[in-house]
Image: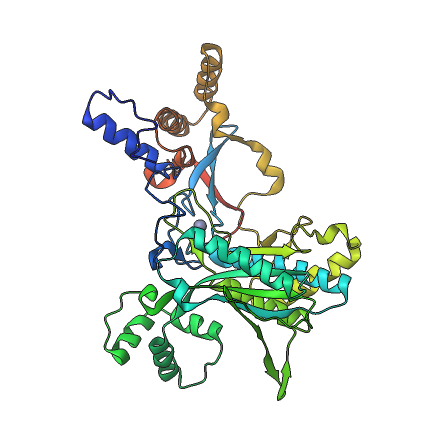
Length: 427
Ligand SMILES: [Zn+2]
């Protein structure tokens, strides 16, 4: 991989052109020619994010005009969510969806096999964390799979974590919260509160800027494992530990109901490690393995059995929420609210903007005829303006995901022109 020479002709006439096309290429998000090499690039803390702590894509939650009303007196404005794990606006729903998907899978598998899942954590030996590459992490995943298999584990779910909170920071958090903090999930929750880093600095005399300064790069893998009564131990490549919890003074080795599973998954997924700044290379933070790899509950359970599991998991997820979640037949979570100003029967009156863009003379004539048929002159001029702007955008070389008529870039509509807003997907 060299410089971005792929799309730019060698004899590019001016430096300016070259810079522009390079910029346009980078903006597509497909620019992976940034020197990341899985076997060579040494990973650092900047190579990982946790959910909600990455960048929001430009198109997320930016309203744009998507449809025009058939009589030219209004438009439909749409707000979409990117639903990316790293997005500060969308990550909560991303976490809920993943918790739901994996909890349903775990509960279905538990029902079919009559076993409850145990918890385990696989870590690299400290000496092996130095100068780590993506290839090392891939090997770590493979070694972990092999090792648990040799311990007679049949199936499981894995959640990858990139960081551990620094010991001194943990102590500082204990001081701040008055000692009542014991699980690693609680530390992460405590760390993510605005202003918390300053409090930590006050105690430790440090000058940390953000949460990343409070953690060490320390890749490890959490697992829910079946069957739950297996003993497992590590080997020279990995440290493998079975985890227990104390319930009513008794040591418990398995997650015994769906509430435990949901709670545990939510805590694990809430700060999973998302590989970033790695060009086209990915590291899936969540995965299933063994018999759970490609395990589809709907192929093994009746509709009623699956629905019972989904319902019980959703009710745990919905506890303490003011706006509750629903699931579609496909298992996608949605918020139980309707943001749309537009009644269902009215939606047919709106036509996608794209259909007003003419590709030939005949079409152009009919679009022109439609525009001049708009009875309110203010509306007519505004529609003309919108279509002109939209044509310019389509003709430009901005990335296709950004080729939208963003409301913020438009001049205000006349009073007679009504814009109705709606969310697509969820907030
Ligand atoms: Zn988003």
